[in-house]
Image (spheres, rainbow, N blue to C red):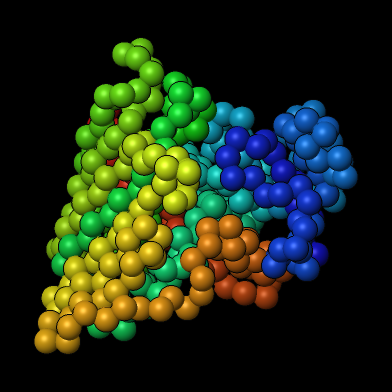
Length: 322
């Protein structure tokens, strides 16, 4: 059983009560820091991250640091203290910090993962299989969209959550690399503040990115805070992925509401995903893989370099935009 400590709830933190979840036979939340007592009554409480790291009965720390800009340093402290780490996105704000995380994981032998469940999430795992099987031929171009609702409560300071490009735009790079299976080698981004709080806010409402791919293909994507919130829209957010190959295309619209493949001389075919699309279930499944890896029962879904390369590229795009 992997004993888990939670630090902070600024993001998609694990539930303090595992409840009816697939990972609870492998892991249990035993301690928290950066939580109000009422939010995790059954767990041990610490005032600081360092206090929790001194606890020898914690194996894995789930990081949703109060300020995302501090999370790379927090992750390194956790690994130096002998803890494995699962970190909310983005785990780092620049390539230097990302390299330090990777180096620390290698030197300490600790497991490090960003919360990156896209690779096991439906309908994208099904799309990845279609591409790997060569059904659309070599990938020529990828288009992706990630959109969330706008609220005035979104942080004005990008250091709090990473900002639009880093915390939402990273999905565009994951779609290209983790799903279409082609590494990004060059990228740039353009951002807009139109419709944000005011001219002094760092918060961006929209970003567009372009990418050059390792195989010579190209990709582009958009991220924004422009989708209406429920009940005006069917769910919290909207996303689309289209992978164009030499022989056709495969696409998902609105989290798999439309999922189909179009093949030259083969026509249009709807695809049934291997599982019902459910982001919460995907996050649980990803965590289960992490716990099995920590216990030595499973190999990583991908190398740490491959998993974090989208974060590297989105940070490179952010630097170019600035």
